[in-house]
Amino acid sequence: MTDADRFEAFVREYQDMVFATAARLLGSGPEAEDVAQTVFLRAFQRFAELSKSPTAAGWLKAVTTNLCLNHLSRYRKRWQFFSELDEPAHPEGYAAGVPSAAPGGQDLDTADRDARLERAVRELPDHQRVPLVLFHFEDMSYQEIASALGVSLGKVKTDIHRGRETLKKELSVFDESH
Amino acid sequence: MNHIDLQQLLERELKQLPTPRAPEALLPRVLAATVQPGPARSYGGWLAWPRAWQLVSAASLMALIAAAWMLLPLVAASNVWLGAPAAPAPITTFVRNAGETATVVRVLWQVLLQPVATYVLVLAISLALACAVLWTAVERLALGGATQR
Image 1: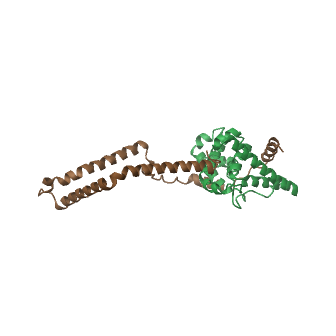
Image 2: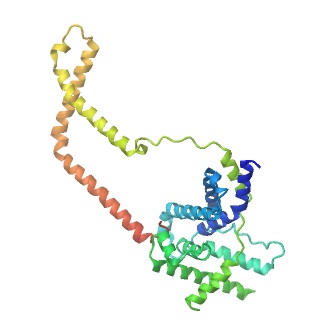
Image 3: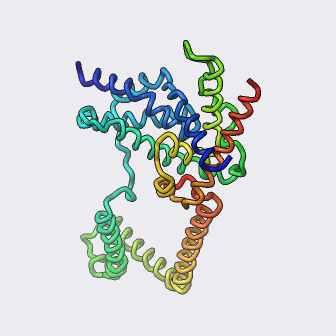
């Protein structure tokens, strides 16, 4: 097996994990794809050591998270300034990348519910979605999130709570209609 | 529903979400990017130089300008050399013109610019500081720092 083959296998193994982390943090499929590509290019540069490392997944997650936070900080601040008044974080279609069809064998309602929840997560405003994703999907503590984002602990807790309320509302609407 | 219940409910719901699949195009994109030669290292200009090089180059440039400033009038004033029959006419003319230009620039500097240079410098520094403070305040207060690292 050549190095190219081994790297391809490496990307195949981790691409879903990297993409999922980026998509949830950024709330956008196309942007997540760009970030995922950058992550794997960085991995390629140090593939010799990374391919043998048992912590490759952790390294990929950390790099993905950092790149996403940098991306959000660099490209969205100006826009956020004008739109962070509890408006949806993204224009229509931003969450269009969330699959809505049920995978084979899965209950249609469950798949629909999952898709709806996934979409609701991606549609949260940046300042709610990012800490919520870091808490629930990346298993970071409130304090770690506050440090990573450079905001107060109270703001992190408030934003996550508001995000959860929104998601709960979304689930309630779905459950009542089914 | 209190905070703990809400947290546990969402924890359950979110943990059971299937991992979003990467788009089909991601793998080919990554593989294509790894075989392409990297972009040519762009020349970042003087600002991209190492700090020591910047200092040395700036000092050299200032020394050069200072030397020219001091020497040109002397050269232009040395009529003996300029008037020597061996000196070609174009060179003599060029040196004389350069000397006259330097004198004019020096007079303009001393009469017009030097009296206000200090004030202009202080004003520029104050404005730059004010802009920096204002931008920092806008970032922290208006943007909420939600995505800062």
